[in-house]
Length: 370
Image (tube, rainbow, N blue to C red; front, top):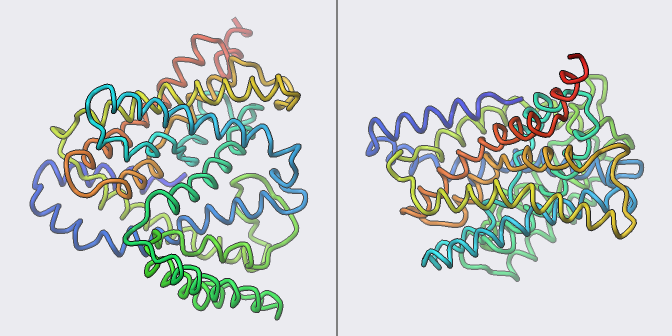
């Protein structure tokens, strides 16, 4: 669990509310380096999880394994997006609808931590949550690339440079280069230039490169750190970048979370309503629909437990904050929706209350012992 991100977010909030002018000067100077360069490695580690989950034997390697969590992730994105757009339109804020993807996000680290606390570390709902979160991450990367370009889209330039980067990564793999640095330093750099020049958010630059980095044919577990004894390039990359990425996330929170508390407004409440209502509603409805079509839930995972999983998945935080910065320029909508992304941490409180009410997870065990 990375505690540096919330520490950075709290520091940014305090700084912005004590001295907004100095905070804005700092954030404006640092935002490109943090959001467009540093976050490349955060999304690279997310792409690493998707890659390992889809290798033969991985958690999402077959239609049978992937169908239900992917369906649940779709429900957990479509319902919040629809609620967000409906509220924005009904309140007379059509310009706010551009932020429809903000409540689609699930912060894997915070959701995982909350699920362990609410349900218990060995609960059967946690693997399903992580599968759902991986699918959510993968779909979120597509949404970010397609719907939130960083500038004027130059598709030919993008395809040419990223195609060259993929070609370099392919050649490196064919030549059995077992060091991750050439993949990042050569293919990754050209890919970043391609994303940047092509108008696609450059934070995604390593996503098309990561699948070519050699890795063991193994699936040690969802979001389980690579074992210290593993020396394949993908594991080595994870070992090397894990702590620097924590520092990047601290900087991301510091640079992006500084919002005056007085900026709470329609964007804040729209994000919160969409994510806190839409996530559990969409996940439960789409999962039950999938079961009606013959898809399988994890054994003994009840509808009540599934609802609590949906509440936990409503913690958007990091990715929701990133979507907000991609969706809006500096102004009231950006400040309001960033506050909504930060306050989505309340999904953990909602999950705790739901678990206590429905008597699942830790509360189920407590009931049995009384």
